[in-house]
Length: 216
Image (cartoon, rainbow, N blue to C red; front, side, top):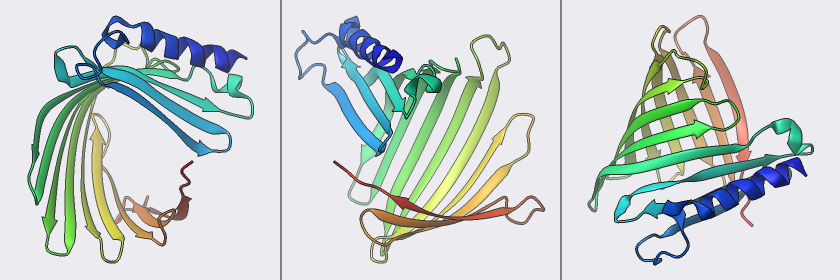
């Protein structure tokens, strides 16, 4: 019952939030109303809306549910905001820059990040470059602000449904973390992934996994 109370409160809060008022015209404030199922005991919901007169900005809440005892999971509600600073779409090139903010209701972690992405079509390959810079606090009571920078490059082949991704990230005061991953889609719902963390170092670690996705 506790998790149901959290879920109802979060949804009602979003619906009653002035910026999410349902009395607004749908064309001026398109609503965000997304539900998904990760497993038989794990669900998530995202509710929100674009801000009035600022269609590039949106706010809302994410609600997560996990069983078999949801109460153990703690407070599953997170608040978020997203502002689209720039966007460009051409037949072979797409660019987007977003400014995002998030508050996690369970841990109290707060973050503000700048996310930049560029997607380009090259003959038989699709390329994607992502860059992210985040300023965050691990908990609301923690006064220490930290900075994290990350970058990734992804090459994928639509013909073979194969993708290779290289990532690198660093948090201030820590060393660089790198990874290389190979993904192969067997069917629309099955994906095999092989990855190596920190290749070329003594701490390298490999992993092979399979992912299954089911929509209902």
